[in-house]
Length: 177
Length: 400
View 1 (cartoon, rainbow over the protein chains, first blue to last red):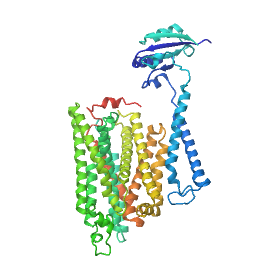
View 2: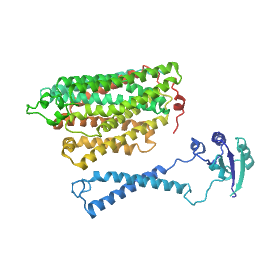
View 3: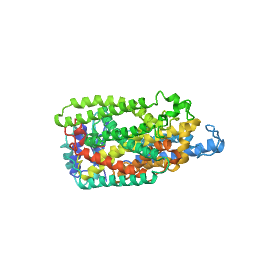
View 4: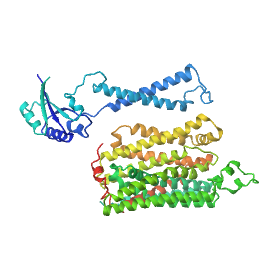
C-alpha cells in the first residue's frame, strides 16, 4: 500500500506541543517530530518509547570492567609480576587497591564511548550518513511534525490534513514514499 | 497545610525513647563494674550526639546550597529540610554536654591529648608528638573553636529559619536575595568549619594520626546521611498526604542525591585508604591496621553497605522513584553511616575493647527517638508548603 507522509511545519515548539496534544487526543498517531533542540515533554505526548541507552551503558561498563581487570591481572600479576608499593605479594586481591582507579577509568571510558557510538548508530547520525530530516530548516529555527496515512487509516487524507491545519502550522507538505 | 503529630507517631517515638532508656540502663548496669566503663559510655554519647547533630547540619548545608545556587525544584520539600535542620539546637546541646563531661574527665581516654601527664616531660607517659601538637590541641583552644563553630551554625540556622517564616507572611524577592547572599556566606564558613571541626572532634581521637582527607570524608558521610533522612521523611509525609505538591520528579531528584552522595563518600573512603595503603608509612597505616584487625566485619561491611548496596540498587531510574525501594535502602544506608561513625570514634577511643552491646544499641535507639520526635514537632510549626517562595511555581511544575 502506497504511504503518504504529511509534514506540518511550526515556528514555535509550544504551538507544536499543543497541536500534538490535540491531534493525539483525537486519536491521530504522530510518527515523528524534528526539531533543532530537544523539546521538553514531547516524548510522552507522541508516545516515544523509553530509551534503552542506559541498559547499553551498563553493559558497556561491565565489558570495560572485565577487560580492565583481566588486562591488569595479566600485565601486572601473571605475565610480569610487579612490585607494587613495596609489597611484592604477587596476588591480584592484595594489590587490588592499586588497580581500582584504572578499572574505574576504563569502565567509564567504555561506557561513555560505547554509549555515544550506539547513540549515533541508533539515530543514523554517524559522520557521513545521509540526513533524514525532511527540511534543512529543522536544524535552524523550525519544527516539523510527521504523520503517516498508513498509521491513521481511520481518517481520510483530507480529514487528516484539515485537522493538522487547525493547529497553527505555517507550512504543509505531502510526499509519497 | 498544617502538620499534626498523630497519636501513632507520638506512641512510636515514645516507645523508641523508652526502649532506648531501658537498653541503656541494662547496658550501664552490666558494664558498670567492668573496665573502660566511662570511656565506653562517653564514646557512645559522642557517636550518637555527633551522628544526629551531623544530619541536622547536613540539612542546613543543603538548604544553604539551594539558596546560594538559586535552585527552584526543592521549594516543595523546603519545609521538610527545615524540619530536619530544626534538630540543630538540640544536637548542639548534646554535643556541648558530651564535650563538657569529656573535658572534666580529662579526655576520658577518648581525647588522649586532654590528659595532663602526656604533656609533663617528667611523667613516664610523656608523649612528645602530643606535646608538639599542644599549641593547637589544648582544652581552651578546643573550646574556643567548638563554641565558634556551633555559634556560627546556630546564627545561620536562626537567620534562615526566621527569614523563611517571614517570607510566608510578606512574600516578594527581597528575602530571597538576602537568603542568596547569606547562603553563599554560610558555604564559605562551612567549607572551613566542616573540615576543622571534624579534625577537632573526631580525628583528634587518634591523636598521633592525621589525614588531610579526613574532613571531606566526614563531610561526605554527613551529607549522605542527611539526604537519606530527607528522602525517607519526604516519602513518609507524602504517604500521609501532607505534601500534595511533591511529585515523582522531586522524589527522583532526592533519590539522585542519595545515590550521588553515596558515591562521594565511597570515593573519599577509597582515596584515603588507597593513598595510605600505597605509601605504607607506619604512623599512617596504624589507623587502618587497628580497624581492620579489630573491626573487620564492620569496617568492610559498612563500605559494602554504603557503596555496593546503593550503587546496584539505586542505579536504575525506576528504583529512584519507587517509595518502598528508597525507604528500605535509605534505612540500611543510614545504619551504614552510623557504623562508619562508630568505627571512626570507637576505633580510636576503645580500640580492641569495643563491642556492640545493650549500651550501644540502647543509646542509638534513644537518640533516634528524640531525633524523630523533635523533627515531627518542628513540622507542626509552619505550613507544610512554603506560601510565598519565589520558585514555588517552578517546583510544583517540576518534571524530569
